Image 1 (cartoon, rainbow, N blue to C red):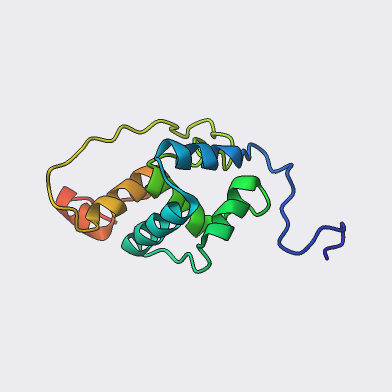
Image 2: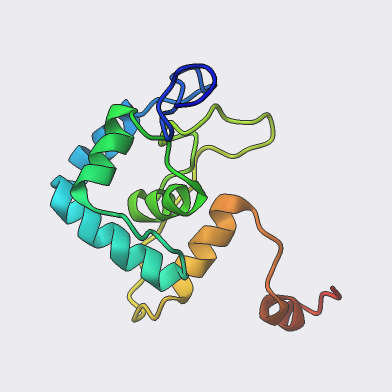
Length: 140
């Protein structure tokens, strides 16, 4: 127990902008069961080099019901899986300069994992990688 009487690991529902019901809406919109979402979350996380060690249907259910707030690796993996931003998935309110809509286009090229990294950079507005910077002639 913590000092305020909450169980360890419990999350206050007063987290600004947190809407856990949006995760379930996204999962259902993608036609996934909890088990199916879990499998795909593992695949997406592995391709992006993220660690989601306890990603099982119970963990996902706890996230969807608001019992546990997902950590940063889970949030990134959910964004990649559902192709949405953190505000769109209900993790927090959009920040003033934060884009909340991304456009995805289908590609006929084989996917080798680079697409996951490109999406992650777009979602999190990360600086270009050293390889990207070299190809663009940008000094780091």
